[in-house]
Length: 284
Image 1 (cartoon, rainbow, N blue to C red):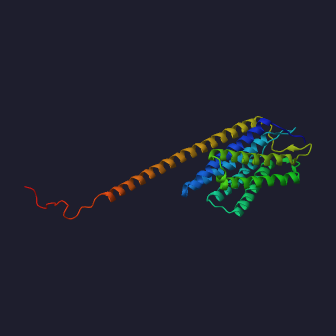
Image 2 (image 1 turned 135 degrees about the vertical axis):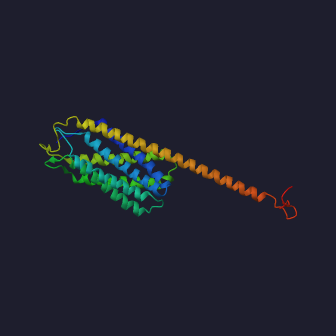
């Protein structure tokens, strides 16, 4: 069955993936600079952010996909598809929480992340509930999973060893987010090219009364992503500023303490004969 694409929605899906990747990278940086409960909080926020970015890109891309028949989405399966994406992202952030990660751990963790991202995509595709079921070209299916795994490897490597790239942290994060966003988007659209929908198929998830639902979902998902990512970036800026203020205050306190010690050491020590005699008798 011949499919068409809404190009503005395709572009929007790629933009969401890139912006979400950038936000997740800033969370990963704060996680690696923090300790204790704060590190766990940034790990959870970053994992959910990256998972939301992957899932939102996928779903907006699905809404950009048009067939000659009406389409709908099974709500439980659609919501269920968020779990593999968030789980894969949390796994990546758990691996990134400490510096000095061995290469074999990146390979294993990245592979599991890629499988999780692929599971998210194909669970989301199953939410169409096509009859007869969608068939997948083995070559495109394998290629999509391989791209998801390679994209996960790139994400982990860029975060672990990105400091070696002689760029400012902003430019490095921008470059990394573009690579990650394009890789994840590429996985989605290559997988869609491998989807084989037979002529005469029908979508069992379609509800005739919900003709305006796709447009509303695009607006809702896009606004949710912008608010979430914008709030995440604002939280990073605030947390970084507070950490810098605390570091400056600690440095000032340390400098003051050292100055007091120097003053004490430089003060002359009076001999017993030079010390003032303090009378213990009351004055009359």
